[in-house]
Image 1 (cartoon, rainbow, N blue to C red):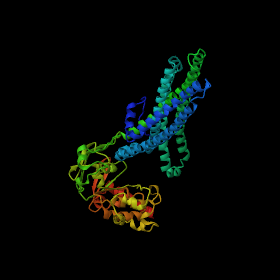
Image 2: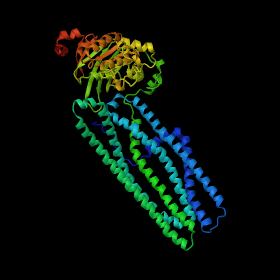
Image 3: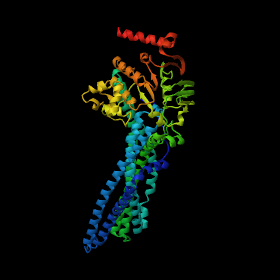
Image 4: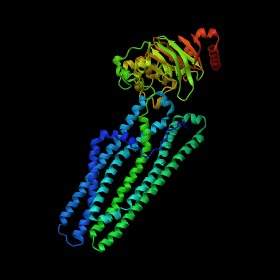
Length: 605
């Protein structure tokens, strides 16, 4: 299970937070304004119906006179038709907001994920991000659309009912509505409890989503380690925690609604008792008594609705807090305004201003430490000439990947600077550097779709000739052509329909199609068969020619032709030179190479 710790939220309803979310409703201003008028109309007609009943009782039933009944009936039918149209409009308009708002928030959230630095993905579980952009955004769409609908209806109903009640009999109105202050106090108490419980529900839901993700992506590992039972127990522990929080929230909600209903019934009883006495002494009409009974019943319905909305608003705040925290997360690595003005940002490149990269790279007194971790590099210096191939060798934690990540500006130095072609790379844009970068990972990720699109992903401007040329360059064309559908063959989710070696060749073609100036091979041959390694090694010799390249290698046989091999230990270069030179020195590299060579020969035998 993930050890990720979420930020704790303890505030009551944060109106500043909801104000931030309201800005996402701006594109729906027209629908919301129309919806507001429709809901006022709905509430107005709902208020009129009991008054129409009062009129009928006092003018038709009690006197026993049907004069004007046809006209009354016509008005009643017109009101019903208008109300039916209003209901259609409210469902249509609210539905558009309910579906459109989550779409906009998800789009904004996904855009933010493209901007965030590598460090964010290092410390944030996938399940957390998935929950934010799925269930949380859906919940916000519901509360901001239907919550608005019910709020406008409820407020209008309460104002309309109260106005007519006080107009008909101020004394009876005060008596009937005397329970409202008690209801308000009880509502405030229960909302605090409900909010606390729902915050825990949302937090645990993120952990469950993360557990699902880990369980699915790590299914093979689970089976090979026979951890099915342990994983199930861990998952049950998390789900039990969510169940307890959900039950707690449901209990408070279920207690609150009957209490509100009871108070409403007390109000109706007061109206019936005191109103009945007034009818007997003839201070109010029988129709007015019926009006008050209907109105007290109706009045507490919008009160309960508003209380429910308040509860849902507080429950949804747990979602709002997390969605906003994602959207407002600032990337740790950003370009300055001056750099963006000249070279563009992540989404809007100004390629016409981008200088060509020759490939000289210099680490100048670079110190780097991961947040909350120890220093990986300290006063590190390295100079790489344009077109040079540098191999990085060393045990785990020696700093190989850190050096490459810093050179690619996935991270930035804590101290010191990195120069590309003599200029601090922070004086150029991220887009400029990354567009000139080719990167092949140890475990390549392919996107669902045909091979053609996966290669084209490296350069969206590429045509058919470019795609085939890139595939031929990395020795992938032959195996692709032998597939039943050739370049139109579906790779499956994550490339699951292809072998590891085939996926690696396609990712290699994808990396080279944009003709990058800087190339990185990160353990690119460690998990493939010897035959495919030979193809990739042959491709490496061709592809890396004239490019500044980094090779992080587990198999030392793949770096024998590197221009320079750097042997690292605890962030320091302890040996440096060509393959033959390092073997002659009979140092650390010599021991690594000879031991690996022996192991490979033993496997062959």
